[in-house]
Length: 254
Image (cartoon, rainbow, N blue to C red; front, side, top):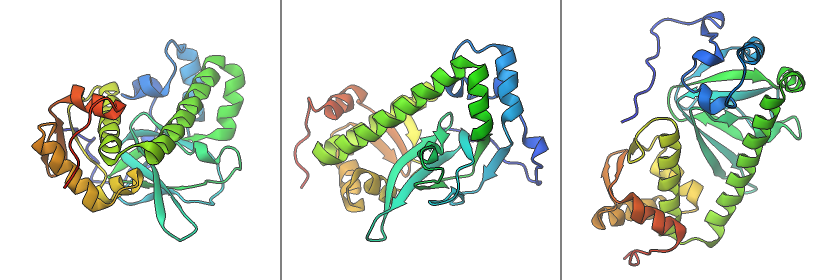
Protein backbone atom coordinates (compact mmCIF):
# COMPACT_ATOMS: atom_id res chain seq x y z
CA UNK A 1 0.00 0.00 0.00
CA UNK A 2 1.28 3.47 -0.88
CA UNK A 3 1.63 5.79 2.08
CA UNK A 4 0.77 9.46 1.51
CA UNK A 5 2.45 12.32 3.34
CA UNK A 6 0.65 13.30 6.51
CA UNK A 7 -1.17 16.61 6.23
CA UNK A 8 -0.71 19.15 9.06
CA UNK A 9 -3.60 19.95 11.36
CA UNK A 10 -2.96 23.70 11.25
CA UNK A 11 -2.93 26.09 8.28
CA UNK A 12 0.39 26.46 6.49
CA UNK A 13 1.61 29.68 4.92
CA UNK A 14 2.99 29.86 1.39
CA UNK A 15 6.47 30.68 2.68
CA UNK A 16 6.40 27.68 4.96
CA UNK A 17 5.62 25.52 1.95
CA UNK A 18 8.80 26.49 0.12
CA UNK A 19 11.22 23.60 -0.27
CA UNK A 20 14.43 22.99 -2.15
CA UNK A 21 14.09 20.84 -5.28
CA UNK A 22 17.19 18.91 -4.19
CA UNK A 23 15.49 18.01 -0.89
CA UNK A 24 12.28 16.80 -2.55
CA UNK A 25 11.80 13.02 -2.72
CA UNK A 26 10.59 13.36 -6.33
CA UNK A 27 13.52 15.39 -7.67
CA UNK A 28 14.99 12.46 -9.60
CA UNK A 29 11.79 12.33 -11.66
CA UNK A 30 11.28 16.08 -12.07
CA UNK A 31 14.89 17.15 -12.74
CA UNK A 32 17.45 16.01 -15.34
CA UNK A 33 20.26 13.80 -14.09
CA UNK A 34 23.54 15.57 -13.31
CA UNK A 35 22.07 19.04 -12.86
CA UNK A 36 24.59 21.26 -11.02
CA UNK A 37 23.76 22.54 -7.53
CA UNK A 38 23.92 26.12 -8.78
CA UNK A 39 21.32 25.32 -11.47
CA UNK A 40 19.03 23.66 -8.90
CA UNK A 41 19.35 26.83 -6.80
CA UNK A 42 18.23 28.89 -9.81
CA UNK A 43 15.20 26.65 -10.21
CA UNK A 44 14.41 26.94 -6.50
CA UNK A 45 14.32 30.70 -6.86
CA UNK A 46 11.59 30.70 -9.53
CA UNK A 47 9.25 28.16 -7.95
CA UNK A 48 6.35 30.10 -6.50
CA UNK A 49 5.10 27.88 -3.69
CA UNK A 50 3.85 24.46 -2.80
CA UNK A 51 0.08 24.26 -3.03
CA UNK A 52 -2.05 21.72 -1.24
CA UNK A 53 -5.39 20.54 -2.55
CA UNK A 54 -8.12 18.47 -0.97
CA UNK A 55 -9.83 15.56 -2.70
CA UNK A 56 -12.05 16.75 -5.60
CA UNK A 57 -10.54 20.25 -5.48
CA UNK A 58 -9.71 21.68 -8.94
CA UNK A 59 -6.13 22.64 -9.71
CA UNK A 60 -7.19 24.57 -12.80
CA UNK A 61 -10.17 24.64 -15.15
CA UNK A 62 -10.61 24.63 -18.89
CA UNK A 63 -10.38 28.15 -20.35
CA UNK A 64 -8.41 29.64 -17.47
CA UNK A 65 -5.33 31.71 -18.40
CA UNK A 66 -2.05 29.81 -18.38
CA UNK A 67 0.50 31.04 -15.85
CA UNK A 68 2.04 28.01 -14.13
CA UNK A 69 3.15 24.46 -14.66
CA UNK A 70 2.53 22.18 -11.70
CA UNK A 71 4.90 19.44 -10.53
CA UNK A 72 3.02 16.86 -8.47
CA UNK A 73 4.85 16.35 -5.18
CA UNK A 74 2.43 13.79 -3.77
CA UNK A 75 -1.08 12.62 -4.48
CA UNK A 76 -2.97 11.85 -7.68
CA UNK A 77 -4.92 13.90 -10.23
CA UNK A 78 -7.16 13.35 -13.20
CA UNK A 79 -7.51 15.59 -16.25
CA UNK A 80 -10.65 15.73 -18.34
CA UNK A 81 -12.37 17.66 -21.11
CA UNK A 82 -16.06 18.35 -21.72
CA UNK A 83 -17.16 17.13 -25.14
CA UNK A 84 -19.78 18.64 -27.45
CA UNK A 85 -22.52 16.65 -25.71
CA UNK A 86 -21.56 18.14 -22.35
CA UNK A 87 -20.04 14.89 -21.08
CA UNK A 88 -16.70 14.61 -19.31
CA UNK A 89 -13.96 12.61 -21.06
CA UNK A 90 -11.00 11.74 -18.86
CA UNK A 91 -7.71 12.29 -20.68
CA UNK A 92 -5.22 11.09 -18.08
CA UNK A 93 -4.25 10.28 -14.50
CA UNK A 94 -1.19 12.00 -13.02
CA UNK A 95 0.91 11.10 -9.98
CA UNK A 96 3.97 12.31 -8.03
CA UNK A 97 6.87 13.46 -10.19
CA UNK A 98 4.73 14.36 -13.20
CA UNK A 99 3.92 17.78 -14.68
CA UNK A 100 0.47 19.25 -15.16
CA UNK A 101 -0.48 22.24 -17.29
CA UNK A 102 1.47 21.61 -20.49
CA UNK A 103 -1.80 21.53 -22.45
CA UNK A 104 -1.99 25.32 -22.16
CA UNK A 105 1.43 26.26 -23.54
CA UNK A 106 0.36 26.72 -27.17
CA UNK A 107 -2.77 28.85 -26.63
CA UNK A 108 -2.03 30.37 -23.19
CA UNK A 109 -5.26 28.85 -21.88
CA UNK A 110 -5.95 25.47 -20.34
CA UNK A 111 -7.65 22.94 -22.61
CA UNK A 112 -8.83 20.68 -19.79
CA UNK A 113 -9.73 20.57 -16.11
CA UNK A 114 -7.37 19.06 -13.53
CA UNK A 115 -8.82 17.75 -10.25
CA UNK A 116 -7.22 16.10 -7.23
CA UNK A 117 -8.26 12.48 -6.71
CA UNK A 118 -7.09 12.64 -3.09
CA UNK A 119 -5.35 15.12 -0.78
CA UNK A 120 -2.39 16.19 -2.91
CA UNK A 121 0.38 18.75 -3.23
CA UNK A 122 2.00 20.48 -6.21
CA UNK A 123 4.88 22.88 -6.74
CA UNK A 124 3.82 25.91 -8.78
CA UNK A 125 6.34 26.81 -11.49
CA UNK A 126 5.68 30.18 -13.21
CA UNK A 127 6.20 29.38 -16.89
CA UNK A 128 7.49 32.84 -17.86
CA UNK A 129 10.29 32.50 -15.30
CA UNK A 130 10.96 28.93 -16.41
CA UNK A 131 11.41 30.08 -20.01
CA UNK A 132 14.00 32.62 -18.86
CA UNK A 133 15.80 29.86 -16.97
CA UNK A 134 15.93 27.63 -20.07
CA UNK A 135 18.40 30.09 -21.61
CA UNK A 136 20.68 29.78 -18.58
CA UNK A 137 20.38 26.00 -18.07
CA UNK A 138 20.34 24.11 -21.42
CA UNK A 139 20.08 20.75 -19.63
CA UNK A 140 16.77 21.85 -18.14
CA UNK A 141 15.44 22.80 -21.58
CA UNK A 142 16.45 19.41 -23.02
CA UNK A 143 14.73 17.69 -20.08
CA UNK A 144 11.57 19.71 -20.69
CA UNK A 145 11.61 18.72 -24.37
CA UNK A 146 11.83 15.07 -23.31
CA UNK A 147 8.83 15.52 -21.02
CA UNK A 148 6.82 17.10 -23.84
CA UNK A 149 7.81 14.26 -26.17
CA UNK A 150 6.66 11.72 -23.59
CA UNK A 151 3.33 13.54 -23.32
CA UNK A 152 2.85 13.40 -27.11
CA UNK A 153 3.66 9.68 -27.05
CA UNK A 154 1.19 9.16 -24.20
CA UNK A 155 -1.60 10.86 -26.16
CA UNK A 156 -0.84 8.72 -29.21
CA UNK A 157 -0.95 5.59 -27.07
CA UNK A 158 -4.34 6.62 -25.67
CA UNK A 159 -5.67 6.99 -29.21
CA UNK A 160 -4.37 3.51 -30.03
CA UNK A 161 -5.84 2.18 -26.78
CA UNK A 162 -9.31 3.49 -27.57
CA UNK A 163 -9.22 2.75 -31.28
CA UNK A 164 -7.88 -0.76 -31.82
CA UNK A 165 -7.65 -2.73 -28.59
CA UNK A 166 -10.10 -5.19 -27.09
CA UNK A 167 -11.51 -4.42 -23.65
CA UNK A 168 -9.27 -6.95 -21.86
CA UNK A 169 -6.19 -5.57 -23.64
CA UNK A 170 -7.07 -1.99 -22.71
CA UNK A 171 -7.39 -2.93 -19.07
CA UNK A 172 -4.14 -4.92 -19.09
CA UNK A 173 -2.32 -1.95 -20.63
CA UNK A 174 -3.80 0.30 -17.92
CA UNK A 175 -2.59 -1.96 -15.08
CA UNK A 176 0.88 -2.47 -16.57
CA UNK A 177 1.25 1.28 -17.11
CA UNK A 178 0.39 1.98 -13.47
CA UNK A 179 2.78 -0.79 -12.38
CA UNK A 180 5.70 0.75 -14.30
CA UNK A 181 5.00 4.26 -13.04
CA UNK A 182 4.82 3.15 -9.40
CA UNK A 183 8.04 1.16 -9.81
CA UNK A 184 9.80 4.29 -11.13
CA UNK A 185 8.82 6.03 -7.89
CA UNK A 186 10.24 3.33 -5.65
CA UNK A 187 6.89 1.72 -4.83
CA UNK A 188 5.81 -1.86 -5.40
CA UNK A 189 5.18 -2.69 -9.04
CA UNK A 190 2.79 -5.50 -8.14
CA UNK A 191 0.75 -4.11 -5.22
CA UNK A 192 -0.88 -0.68 -5.36
CA UNK A 193 -4.14 1.15 -4.82
CA UNK A 194 -6.37 2.41 -7.59
CA UNK A 195 -6.77 6.05 -6.58
CA UNK A 196 -9.37 6.57 -9.29
CA UNK A 197 -12.90 5.12 -9.24
CA UNK A 198 -13.99 2.28 -11.51
CA UNK A 199 -16.26 4.78 -13.24
CA UNK A 200 -13.25 7.00 -13.98
CA UNK A 201 -11.21 4.03 -15.24
CA UNK A 202 -14.06 3.06 -17.55
CA UNK A 203 -14.41 6.62 -18.81
CA UNK A 204 -10.68 6.79 -19.59
CA UNK A 205 -10.62 3.40 -21.34
CA UNK A 206 -13.86 3.94 -23.26
CA UNK A 207 -15.66 1.20 -21.29
CA UNK A 208 -18.66 1.10 -18.99
CA UNK A 209 -18.32 0.72 -15.23
CA UNK A 210 -20.01 -2.67 -15.62
CA UNK A 211 -17.30 -3.73 -18.08
CA UNK A 212 -14.57 -2.74 -15.63
CA UNK A 213 -16.23 -4.75 -12.86
CA UNK A 214 -16.54 -7.79 -15.17
CA UNK A 215 -12.92 -7.46 -16.27
CA UNK A 216 -11.72 -7.34 -12.65
CA UNK A 217 -13.80 -10.43 -11.84
CA UNK A 218 -12.48 -12.27 -14.89
CA UNK A 219 -8.86 -11.35 -14.18
CA UNK A 220 -9.35 -12.61 -10.61
CA UNK A 221 -10.78 -15.94 -11.83
CA UNK A 222 -7.84 -16.35 -14.20
CA UNK A 223 -5.40 -15.79 -11.32
CA UNK A 224 -4.00 -12.61 -12.89
CA UNK A 225 -4.89 -10.24 -10.06
CA UNK A 226 -6.07 -10.12 -6.50
CA UNK A 227 -8.47 -7.31 -5.58
CA UNK A 228 -9.46 -5.99 -2.16
CA UNK A 229 -11.61 -2.87 -2.55
CA UNK A 230 -9.20 -0.46 -4.28
CA UNK A 231 -6.02 -2.42 -3.60
CA UNK A 232 -4.81 -4.49 -6.53
CA UNK A 233 -2.10 -7.17 -6.51
CA UNK A 234 -0.69 -8.27 -9.87
CA UNK A 235 -0.20 -12.02 -9.44
CA UNK A 236 0.95 -12.74 -13.01
CA UNK A 237 2.60 -9.56 -14.33
CA UNK A 238 4.27 -11.42 -17.20
CA UNK A 239 0.92 -12.68 -18.48
CA UNK A 240 -0.60 -9.24 -18.09
CA UNK A 241 2.25 -7.78 -20.14
CA UNK A 242 1.60 -10.39 -22.81
CA UNK A 243 -2.08 -9.46 -22.84
CA UNK A 244 -1.17 -5.79 -23.06
CA UNK A 245 1.07 -6.55 -26.03
CA UNK A 246 -1.68 -8.59 -27.69
CA UNK A 247 0.27 -11.84 -27.64
CA UNK A 248 -2.05 -13.56 -25.14
CA UNK A 249 -5.81 -13.50 -24.78
CA UNK A 250 -8.23 -14.58 -22.13
CA UNK A 251 -11.48 -16.22 -23.14
CA UNK A 252 -14.37 -13.84 -23.94
CA UNK A 253 -16.39 -12.40 -21.12
CA UNK A 254 -19.83 -13.86 -20.55
